[in-house]
Image (cartoon, rainbow, N blue to C red):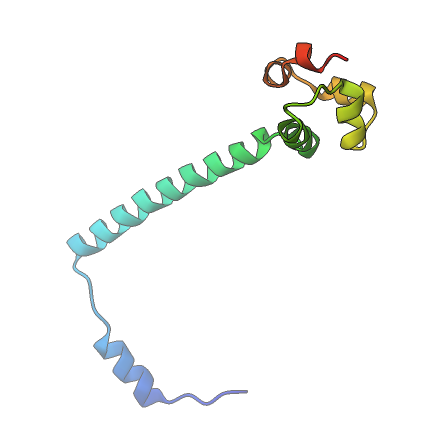
Length: 108
């Protein structure tokens, strides 16, 4: 074997270990169950947030528009700024994103 065992240390550790009563054990298991359910709920929420996150292109467009809010800009300019075609940029818009950008302001 690649290690040595000290049987006396193992024996001492075994006999110094805390023994739980059935009631304590049941309560610890109950707490672990509550913790596991809570952890699962948080993990599910995090996964949903990741899947519902806006595409990077949309975040970049929002940042560009935010930085040029006082300037008259068109869809072509925003698309060029984020390095995509105007067609693809428009295709990526959903109705709620379009209302955020206020497309009337962007038509140029």
